[in-house]
Image 1: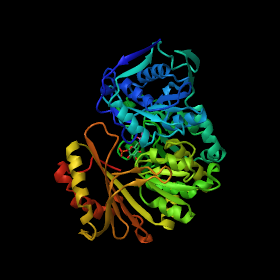
Image 2: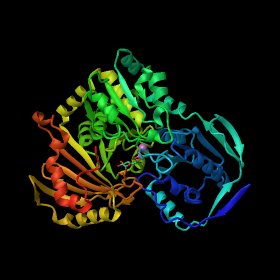
Image 3: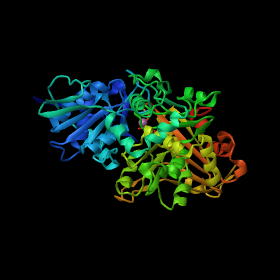
Image 4: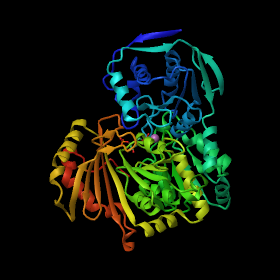
Length: 542
Ligand code: VG1
Ligand code: CO
C-alpha cells in the first residue's frame, strides 16, 4: 500500500558542488530526507517502470536512508531498484552500474571526504542516465521544488534485506541487491593491462593503499589483492566503518598523514595511494615524492596511451578552473582539445558525452575518464600502476622527466575552514568589487595582468554558469584563485588556489610553499585574509 504524507518545505535543501550535504541530525529531522528525495523525483520526467540505482559509502545513516529511498521509489512508480549489497556502492561503481544496467538514474548517498557518524555529515546526490551528477538545470529544479513541496509518497512494506544478494518484489517493484564490486572490477580489467601490473608486483614492486576505513576497502581488496596479487598487508584500513574510524576520509597530506610519513620514511614502498569516503578521489605518493593532483592529471594524460583502454590516444583533456595549467601543456603537445570547467564533476558530463575529452581532473584529487561519468579513485591508481608497469621507472623518475619536458607548475591550495558565512562572503565581495582596478597593480615582486570572475559557457548545451571563482593572473603566468566551497556543512570554507609555472631546469626542485611565497603574500595583501577572518594561518594546506 502506498501512503501520501504531508510535509512542509525545508528552506535549506539547495544542492551544492556535489549534492545536498548536511549533518546527520538534519537529515533525521522528521520528513527532511523524504522531502528532498520527493523533490528529486518530482523534478524528473518519465521514470515510470524504469530502474533506479541506490547505494552509498557506508557511512552512518546509509542503511536507513536506503530503506526509505527504496519505499519511495516504489510508491513513485519506479519498476526496479538496484542496490549495492550492504548498501555499499562507491561513487564510480554507482556511475558504472547506472550506465551498464541502463538505469534511469541513481541516488548516491555520501558526504565524500567529510567525516561520518551520528553528529557528522551525510549527503544525497542524484545522478542521471549517463551515470554522472545531475547538471545544474536539474539541481536547480530540485531546489525550486523543495521550496514548495507539500507531500511525499512512500510504500508500506517491511525492511529489505540489503545483505543478501538476490532479487525480490515489494510494492509492485523489483528489488535487486547486487555485488557492489564485480561489475566495476570487470570494467577495470577491460581498461588496464592486469598481466603487466601483476608482473610488476611479482617482481617486488611494493605498494601501499590506504582505504581510510571507507568504501574502497572491498574494491581494493578484490582488485589489488585478489586479481593483481598484491600482498594482503598492502591494503590498509580496508573495512568500511560507519564513522571511518573517527577520521576524515580525505586523501590529502593532512588526513592521510600516516601514508605520507610511510612514503617519506626509510624502507618506503615504491608506490602509495589512498582514496576518500566514496571512492572517487585519489592521492598518489611515490617513494619520497608527493605527486600533486594537478601534476598527476598531466602525467596520466601524457602517459595514458600506455594502457590498453587508451591506446588510441585522447580526444581531449578537461580540468576544473582552479586546477593547474600543467595538463594544458600536455594537451598542446598532443594536439588535442583542452577544456576549463567550473569546480565539480557535473560540468564534465556534457564534454564526455559529446566525445570532446577522454580524461578529466580536479586539483582536489579527482581524476577520471570517459569509462564512467564520475571521478574515480581506484581507476587513477590502476592507470598509474599500468604506466609504472610499462615504463619500469620509479614515480620520482617519471615525475622528474615530465617536469624536464614540460616545466613544473608549483601548486598549492590553502583552505580556511568553518569561518563565519558573512565574513567569507564579505571577503569575496570586497575582492570582487576591486577586480577591475587590479590590472597593472604591483604587489610584492608580482604585477597583476588581469583579473575576473570566472563564467563558464558550456560548449555543448550553451548553458552559462556565473560566479565560479575569482581569478587573478600575474605577468609571467602565475595565478591566484579565490572560491568558497560548496560541500561544507558548517559555516563557510574559503579556498585559495596558487600556481606558478617554472620552465627553468635549474629551479625545478624547490619546496612548494617557498616557491609560492610571493603568491601567498599577494593573496594576503589583496584580500586581507588575516584581518577579516581572524585566522593566522590556513586550516589545511594541500
Ligand atoms: C570539493 C572540491 C571539488 C570536488 C567536490 C566534490 O568541492 O573542491 O573539486 O568536485 O568537492 O568532491 P568544493 O565546492 O568544496 O570546493 V567529492 O569527492 O566531495 O564528491
Ligand atoms: Co568523494
